[in-house]
Amino acid sequence: MVSQDIFSRILLYSSENLVPFMLILFLGAIFFRFGAYITVKLLNEFVNHFEINTMDTVTGKKRKTGHDFYETVKDVLWQSFEEHFVYKSKFKRRKLDRLTSFSDRILLIKEGSRRMIDDTLNHAKYCSDSKNKPDFNEIVTYLIKSNPVFKKVYGVLPLETISEVLSVLPNIFVVLGIFGTFIGIMLALPELQGMDLSNLEATKKTMDEFLLKIAFSMNTSILGIILSIGLNIMNSFFSSDVILDNIRDTFRNSLGLLWNESHSVHSRARKSKEKTKAKAS
Image (cartoon, rainbow, N blue to C red; front, side):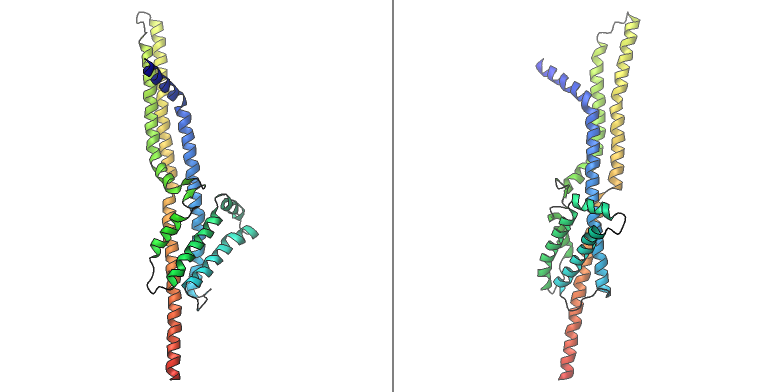
């Protein structure tokens, strides 16, 4: 009897609080989905800026000949950092600069990018002495995963965990909706036990209340389906995984271009010295 009473209390509590719980869970999912999306989106803007400066260096617009790989990467990265964060925060020339500067401070994008630059330069020191081209894909993957800012959302929860939870949450909403419907049916059925079929008015009143409660319990299933569809749409339009893949590709390709450029410069300089020596001899 005690266990049955506890079970009944749990069912009653669930029926009263399931809908608010689902709505709060949905709002929390939106909050963290936007947080994850904005974080990687702002990082992507910095990486794209780095790519632009890399192309300018490779094509000769900002070439600094004679530098090794480490010095070249250092110059391009810090130049990109100054232009993207310092100048934007100081001058605010574009309309959205004020908003993005605020987002950079709230989500610690500036600090995360500075940490990413330091980690990149630490790897570049060892790469400069190597004759073989490093595995930049492995290096970039490590840089992003090890960054304390970009691997967490709002600096609290891991980005990978958030993405996994948000991917299964639409199915959970459907299950919670069905669960709420069954709870409503279980709570409404006992009312039919005391129904007196000889009293038509009382019977009709009991049946009307029963059907009303059943219809109301169906709303949780409908709400679960609506929330599931809404979150699936959110996950599709604001996916952080696609942007992270673009960040890895862009950063990896930029480092590869700077590696090729620095080695081609040294190769041309070495050949020039060899020709000079040959002419002198």
